[in-house]
Length: 256
Image (tube, rainbow, N blue to C red; front, top):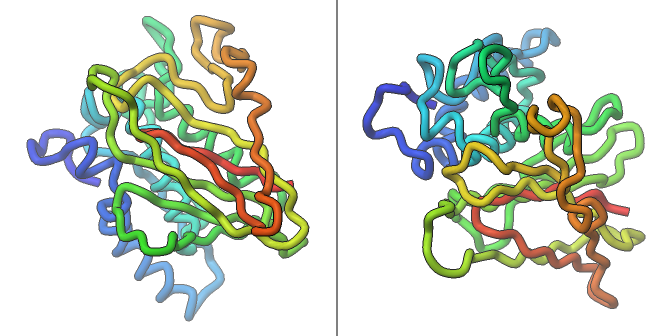
């Protein structure tokens, strides 16, 4: 995505930005597509992460980077990149966890949790970018996922990457999304990737769960009971799901 020492790199302009992510992966996407004409060998990113040089504090180690992990991973997967190996170390800002000294679970870890929840455990999950109508906002991205054995839409991911910091005054903005879903879908369970702001390093949750080391040594702990059971029903006669997503927040919709 860029160098950790580049002064022009920013959270909003570089990491929390779908256009920037597409630009960063463009060469890999082109090469992966070209290779598919000649071989079935999978295209793998052998070593990758947010910013070269171990990442940068205030960018790679804050909640905004968790949203980057989700968008980067799902966009790569939607473009035929089978696997991405995220580089880790014991001290790098972009590390998903800190295994020595003061033990911590870091924001990028939560991005990986969300990606795992979105992809699921079904073999051959198919991922595609979802084009939102009349929207060219590079700070919003969305994906649809279905299990290839059933050919049925299973999950939808939406990311609102408009930056909101924990120190920002006023009410936190949100965006409302209306999704037309296939016949037979009654509603969706909602799992949110949330925190107080893009700039925080603690207090991150996914689906109301915390994986912070201090709570239970990294094992999941329910910290928001209501968030574990959140759901939305299809609007009658319209086959539409309506979901509100705050700035600097992402959701996985598990359709049922």
